[in-house]
Amino acid sequence: MRILESIPSRYDRGIRILTLGKLDEVYDRLTSHIKKGQRVLDVGCGTGALALRAAKKGAKVKGIDINSRMLEIAERKAKELNLNENTEFIEMGVAELGEEKDESYDVVMSGLCFSELSDDELEFTLKEIRRILRNGGMLLVADEVVPESNVKRIVSWIVRFPFVLIAYILTQTTTKPVRNLKEKIERAGFKIELARWNKLGNFVEILARKAEQEGKYG
Amino acid sequence: MAKKAKPEKAKKGISKIYDFGYLRYIFINIIETLLRMFPLLCKTGLIKIGNPDRTSPVFLTCNYHLTVERVKRALRGMDCYLLVANSRGINVWCASTGGHLTNHDVISVLKTSGIEDLVDHRNVILPQLAATGVESKVIKEKTGWNVIWGPVYSEDIPAFIENKLKKTPEMREVKFPLLQRIEMAIAWAFPISILSALIMIPLWPEMIFPTAFTIWSLSFFIFLTFPLYSRWLSSEGRRIGFIFFDFGKGGFQLILWGIVMLCLIIYSLLAGLTLEFVLRWAVLSFIIVLILSMDLMGSTPLYKSGLHKDRFLEVFLDVERCRGVALCEQVCPRNCYRVNRELHTTTIVRAEKCVRCGACIVQCPFDALYFKSPEDEIITPEIVRRFKLNLMGKRVIKIE
Image (tube, each protein chain N blue to C red):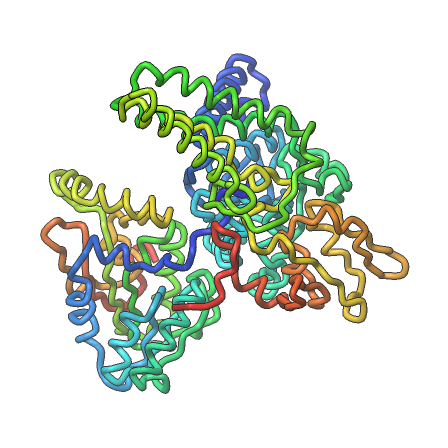
């Protein structure tokens, strides 16, 4: 059985931009909260869409991802933009966040990464992010979510279906929109300051802060 | 839902529930054999089998649904933990060789599933075929877990446990027995017959069933008689093909089909037959050519696909670096290695059986093994570890 030996490198997330279209706008808005000199971690940075935006604002950014090829593209882009002094890209999965020191970041951000994680992984990741953020540090998230209302859930499913099918046929990858992302982030000990859904309710931008005291279940 | 209830009940040996579980298992096997060519995902994470305690063994497998079902079946009656790592719904060997079951996926399930709080030991048993993609050295460094390479087939797990985690050469070798050949015949015939039925609906509806029948019988014939002709299979020459289909040396089958088509057109011109007639026979004969051109060698675990460029690579052993730790012997699915335990020396005794899976190269802790191409190009362990094979059997090294 050597049928599915591999998907070629075109595995880029480009396919998912199809489903959003407005990703650039969303990322610009998210990174507008970042200030010069901040220490920033980009979890699941891919080809560096968020990380490079943050670096342009003068932050010191570390991008982590498990796909070494995407990281090479990110590194190359950083070099082209003369941002390589402020950026560092490392092959590392969320499960390896344990290597990061406590309270060593001002901002942790993540775009289209949580939807690739299992529930266990997401819970672990949020716990680790809380640990490595300084008190009052910011968590910025942009990701696909399951809409909260039933009607939107059905509409979103119908709209998404052709893209899911195309993405599956081309790359055999599929995304798993996150259920109750806002609640999960709150439960992990963050205070939501801003949550903004798109019209279909299947994409959310979240700005949260590490709460001073332990989370409700934390 | 049935996950939790089943092992307990099975243990009590209540026959009715046992039978129901078995029926469900058979049903899943049939459906998923038909759909074998497509990835089928299941949930990743931790599964408890029986009543495990803090010393129970920990197994790990991929998240291809059929594999998880088969492993659970093989572990029935034991008390242990099963970790399901994310392989994107692809089976262990393909996922590991193609870069879909990686170190990160194994680290992730070890760290996030909560298994570290449940057992006192740090030994995880991985399927041997994952050795093309998961590096035991990296897992140990990053998580402290020791990787033990289990048998190739899950049904050997009980014997492997009984044998105190030692594998016999039989447990290490991939085979292509009758049952697996039948599975492959079905996996081929089903999607192709569905596809050709769809084409035949508007074109030639009377031929839907005869075509399907031809496809299924050819498919079964090819795989059932495999042992009779396998010794003559060869991957010499430049072949033309695409992923699942191998059209032979220089596209021989396609050329043959072209000639038949030409004769058909000439004949119908002379005999005054319609375009529809030509089109119908063209499609029908192409479907037959297609099934006869399946990438047979690549569909077996015994050969490297004739389309893969790396089929002519050879594994070389750097005797200076080798310390005889025998990891290569542990992970080779074709039993190519023999290690002398006293002298700590390794020899490649069955090089002709090698399928270039690269597991030995990936695992060797001293980088003593490497690939060499017929043009004397060296493919280092670093490259084999980092760049995985795509569907056409190429290592994608360049990035765009």
